[in-house]
Image (cartoon, rainbow, N blue to C red; front, side, top):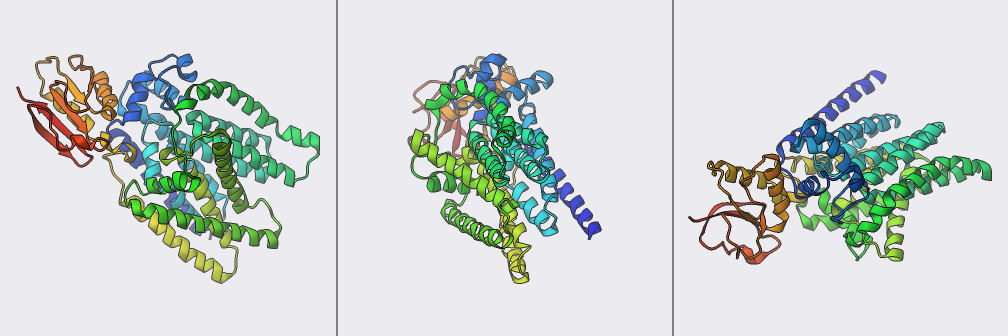
Length: 477
C-alpha cells in the first residue's frame, strides 16, 4: 500500500509540473489584458508610498501586493508580459506545493486523486495564476493559510497560528475581497479555542497572533480601503444570484450561461449533503472540528460575513472574479466531504466514489474544453490587441506619426505595447465612440455598444473582424 501511495504521489507531482508548464506557457503567449496594462501604466511607476497608500486613480485596480511585486520583477528583469506575471507564477507553484502537502494529511488515495482534481484543475483559476493580477496570489495565500490552520489544529504549534494569520493578511493585501476570509479565520480560530474550554488568560494568549497581525493589517489597508470605498463594484440582489451564479458561470469559462443556475443549485445540494454528513459524524463521533467540520464552518463564516456586511454597510455582493475566494474554500469542503464519506459503511463509501468520480470527470471535461494559450476569459476582448498593434508597427516603416482610435476597454493595452516597444511615433490612443474622430486606424469593440457593429468609420477599410467582437479598420489614404 505504501508503495502504491508513493507511485500515486509521483503521478500527482508530475501533474503539478504539467500545470506549471501550462501557466508558464500562457504567461509567455497570452497578450496583455486591460487590467494588467492599467496597473502597469498607472500604478507600477508610482513610488512605494504611492502604491501602498493608493494614490489616484482611485479604482480597485491596484492590487497592492501584486503591484509591488510587479514593480520589483520589472525592475530586475525588464518589462514584458512574462515579467508582469512572474509573481503569480511563483504563487501558483506555492499553491501546488501546499495543495499536495494538505492532501497528504488526508490518508486516502481516492481523496488524493479527487482532491487534486478539484483543487488544481480549474481552467478559470489557472487564468489568474498566469496573469499579473492579485486574485491568483490571494487564492494561493488563502490556501496556505488553510493548510496552516489544519496544522495548528493537529499540532497546536504557535508558529502555525502566526503563519495562518500572516498568509491570510497577505491575501488581503493581494486583493481586498480576501478580507472576508481573514475575518472568518478569526471566527474559526476562536471556535477551536472555545471547544477546548480554555480559561480567560489562555484564551487571550492564544489570540495574541490575531491581535498583532490584525493591528498591522488594519494600519496598512485602512487608508486604501477608505479611498476606494465608493468605487467598489458588485451586485445588490442576493448572494445566491450575484455571487454564486456569477461564479459558476465564471467556472464554466463564461460559456454555456444556461448551465450557471443549475450548477449553482447542484452546489447547494452538495452543501446540504455536507451538512447532513457532518451532522451524522457529529452525533456518532462527537468530534466538532473534523476536517469536514472545519471546512463547513469556514465556508459558512465567509458567506455570513459577506451577507451581513451587505445588509449593514450596503457593500455590494462580490461577483465573478472578485468572488474567486470561494474556489479554495468550496473545493476544500468538497474534498473533506468525500474524505469523510470514505469512513462510512461500504455502500455509502462506494456510492460516494461513483458520485464524486462523476463530478471529478465533469471538472476535467470542463477544463479540457477550455484550456488555451490565446486569451483570458475575463478579458477576451483583448486577445487580438497585440496583433493589431504589431500590424500598425510593421506597416509603418517610416515611423511617421500614427494615431489609433479605440474603444475604451482597449486603450490600456494599446498604450502598454506602445510603452514597452518604445513606439514614440505612435500617439496615445484616443477614445472612439461613434467613429467621428479622424485617425489612421480604428480598433472597435462593439459588444458594449451595438450601434458600432454595422457602422464603419468614414473612408476606411476593414482589416480584420474577430470572434471576440473586435473590428480593425485602416483609414483610406
